[in-house]
Amino acid sequence: MATVQLNNIKKVYPFISGEQKSKKKKNDENKPEKKKSNLQITDEGVVAVQEFSLDIADKEFIVLVGPSGCGKSTTLRMVAGLEEISDGELVIDGKVMNDVAPKDRDIAMVFQNYALYPHMSVYENMAFSLKLRKEPKDVIDKKVREAAEILSITQYLERKPKALSGGQRQRVAIGRAIVRDPKVMLMDEPLSNLDAKLRNEMRAEIIKLRQRINTTFMYVTHDQTEAMTLGDRIVIMKDGYIQQIGTPQEVFNHPSNLFVAGFIGMPVMNFFDADLKREGDKYYVEVGGLKVELSKEKEARLLAKDVQSQPVTLGVRPEHTDVAEKGISARVEVAEMMGSSVHLHVNASGRDVIIIVPTVEMEDSYNIGDTVKFTFDGKVAHIFSKETDLNLEF
Image 1 (tube, rainbow, N blue to C red):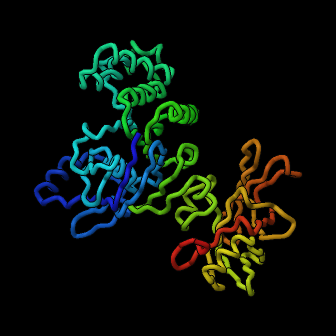
Image 2: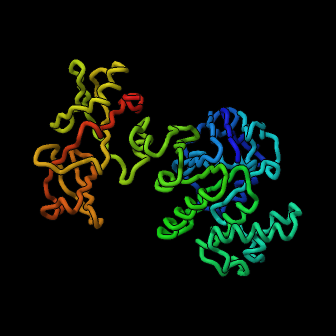
Image 3: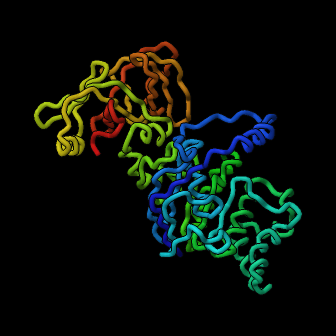
């Protein structure tokens, strides 16, 4: 339905005056203190989003992911027109939208808290935006019932929101958005209020929905599982900056820096202080008395960048770490039975490390205090610079 371009988008929240600050302080006296983020502070004010550039193809599903306070929701709200763009350019279908009113952008947004009208029925909630457009009644009825059928909420059309579960309310909120046939669908953490089982179900529903409506999606979440399962591409953010853009497989297999490596993947990647050794055209990593040769692909990338021997941060995912007779020595601190596997939390040279052991490969159970040895293959090792935190392969 639409292409979206964000060209060097920036959002700065100006400092408030002394009078405004005094008034705000009085209003906030009884509110709980919020944790401050690491956003950049300049003479202009607090920079929430910095140098954000992204080209979104027609019908593409883009997911913005990152920790709380990284600027992902602010970016979404700028696309929606709910936040003013401080600098840069927003282009939708070739038209600059910076000064276009939200109602004229042909965008629909699904919020985290559903934002349904409590006094209206499900049908009335879904039909409301169409009534404002003065659409014919028969057209409204057709669109509402088609959307309800897609989302399996036809039986709830006469109910009020208070009579619905969280998952049903979220379906209504999505239905209210899709009846408008928007060019761009924006979703701001729509599943965060649901329990784990419902989140899984609703993720599947959104994937099915995406196949049935021809719309470009921008989806915000802090849940990497949602990001990995829903997105055609993922935009990983931190402190207002883009850290990496890529397909789920790309950011998982080739994280661009230490932050992305530690953020994507569950359980989180294991990190070690190690040494990268170059011997001619060969590269090895040495850690805890273990020497592992890197794969041919990794060696070729390191050679192309003429990377020399140096101390590095080594990253290995728990699922790529194997218990072996020879390897790095570690002490078991916790053994979590997860059904198909056991997650061993061990201490190796003062570092907390997680090893995933498939139960089908287990000969004995693991107890707290046991000593184990583990190793890894050179094709799954990630090498990061100690100075820049960047992946030395890219």
